Structure formats: structure tokens, C-alpha cells
Length: 223
Ligand SMILES: [Zn+2]
Image (cartoon, rainbow, N blue to C red; front, side, top):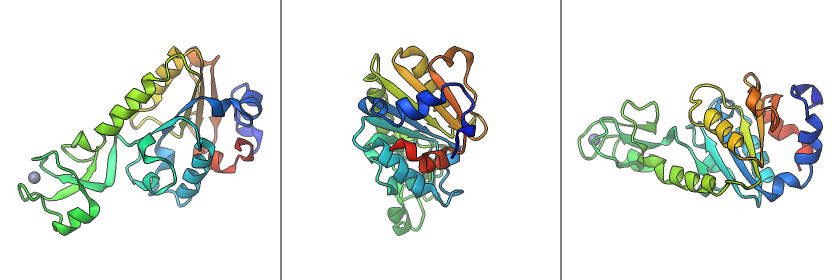
């Protein structure tokens, strides 16, 4: 990948000083994975996760993903540092939400895909369920909130990778807010389409027009 993908000024800061050196790696890294990381649409997704895992190895990071394919949990990224608030296609809940119980795929199969409490079908535990049982992700969401509170006034790199406007209230808007209020934050928005940076963040943010999975995989300057 060449530098034409860089649309905001400061490409040198991004690629030479920050990413290629030490500064990214000595502080906290908040990562948001959006629609571009949909594992059902991308054969290269594990390659992306492994490249991301190498980038984050040994660092104090937390990942928020909008994706529900669950493939991130098959990667070498630390599941204790990941939250998937939109759910997981491989976990199951009662369609009628008669219980907050959540079952793994193998358990759901053993129960013939039927709720043991009310007999309704079991459906994937995701935001697309009519009555989404949020217990599946809430423990990790609390861990994320706690981690995030520990970033106050600390050096923080925010990597927003391929998050568009499907659920902007989960990554885009709160990440911008986090970067805005942290004077030591640096914000990178990598996105094929929605790479623009708002005026109030322009001093601490870089917008990079690129497919964010390929960007992470291809750039040899990251490690
Ligand atoms: Zn039920």
C-alpha cells in the first residue's frame, strides 16, 4: 500500500513516528472494528486478525467489534480484551426471551434448537433478535467500561477500523468523544468510505482512506 491512501495531512506522523516506532506501543490502544471486518463477507478475516494480534501483542488494548460472526474469538487476540455488543451468531437465546439464559451452539444442538423453558425456537443471540438478550455481552461491556476509565489522562491510541454508520453509537461517536476529551489521545480512522475527520478533532486525528483489513495486513511499517 502506498501513501495515496493518506488523505489527511500528517502521513509522516502516522506511518513513521507513531506506527513504525515505539510510541504506539507504550501506551493504551482502543480498537474499534466495524462493518469492514464482517467475517462472513471476508475470506481474509483471520489474516486481518492475526496482523492485528501482532500489532497489539503485549500492549494494553481493548477491542470493540460490531460484528457477530464470532470469528475474532478463533484468532489469537485475547478474548478478555474483546467485547461484541451486537452479539454472537454462535450463541443462542430463546426467541421469546422467556429467560436470560444463553447457550453455546453445541448446547443448542443438543436441545434440538428448542427453548427448554417454553418450547420456543432458539435463535442467534444478536442484536437482530426481536428481543435481544443482552446478558451475553454485558460482563465484557463492564470490563470495557472499566478499562476505558483507566485511559483518562493516559496516552491513548484510538484505532477506528472500518466502522461506518450502522451502529454509530457503539464505536464512531463514543470513540470521537473519548479522543476529544483525552488530551493525550491520538485518533486514527481507517475506512474505505467514511474516513473523514470532524473539525474539532483535526489536531489529533488522521483520516485514512483505505480498506481497514487490508491496511492492517499490508502495511509492513506497522511492525
Ligand atoms: Zn423460552
